[in-house]
Length: 292
Image (cartoon, rainbow, N blue to C red; front, side, top):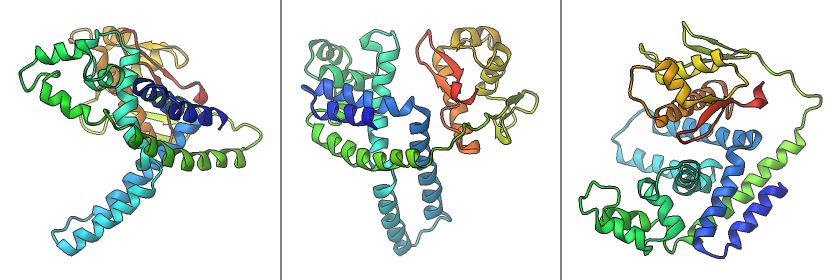
């Protein structure tokens, strides 16, 4: 809680917009990469998806019923921990800056949102890239960049408010961790992977990796991880060489596959951050030591 409070104060006291966005990234990063904290927001996200589906199923064309469902959705999003502030900060600020921070591509090839947060739309290089990109589908097309810039320029107070309402509610949930501490430490469950059936088992919890007929990339990533050793770092380049030797694949395909594994494990087994995932050409995945 002390670390969260310190990082929160750093956001509010940031000396410039670029530092402000960097400090929000640091605040969210601490949550994302601390398994017990990530578990809180992942649980809130799962609750939101379940309740949202219940509101909108079955489908209807009745206008009165649609109005009622919109009201229920508004209330759900206002008071759910994941959608009340956190989701916006995660998607608009954390992910673009995290990818920029952990990859080696030239700035021109990075996410424009990260560049806008760190350099501003009036940066000479950004203006030059916009000038060189008249085609409307190009990533630095002026109309597109100006649209993204509306998310950031002059929006500091908006994100401060989003963080403030999340921070207060989140500290309450973190406080409950202290109240519910269990001594002694629980025995960690056995982790196995049935490659034939494409089923990951974490103790008595079952996670179906293959949801259709074809085995997804995430299946082969798990095959490699279990062959390589659960405590070892599985580098994307090594996975591609071992499991996809005849295919032209980039690290991003492996990165997405690892995120797919984490999503399925979270949804089916209620286990957060099963894999620690690093981005970039030198990126890797590794089973979270909390589960080993």
